[in-house]
Image (cartoon, rainbow, N blue to C red; front, side, top):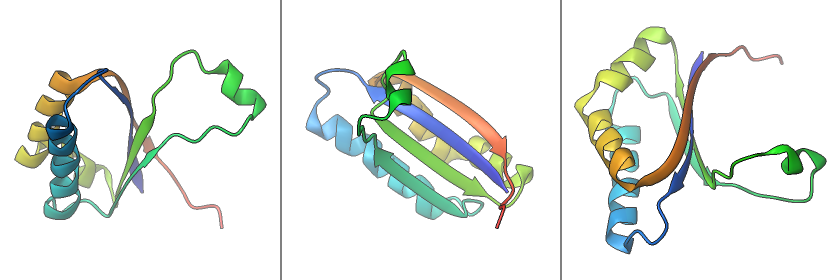
Length: 107
């Protein structure tokens, strides 16, 4: 299984319509790109864990996209619906990190 993990921080003061456009593009990608097995998005939670003090940058949102294989991940990244997300991210984000991982279930 492959995961595409994106941590991101919107620019301060983006309009509600731009924020909605980004969420809509993510929703479309999650439902209309066939290789996506699961698409999750959420807001960062802090709870006083010691490791939280080690974070040098704050990324208040995360997206985790799951694929059966590397081919599915590549199809996602090359899909026109993903290109729209990329354009919006470059326009609306102050910062982001994106990483890909091959993972195995341990249980």
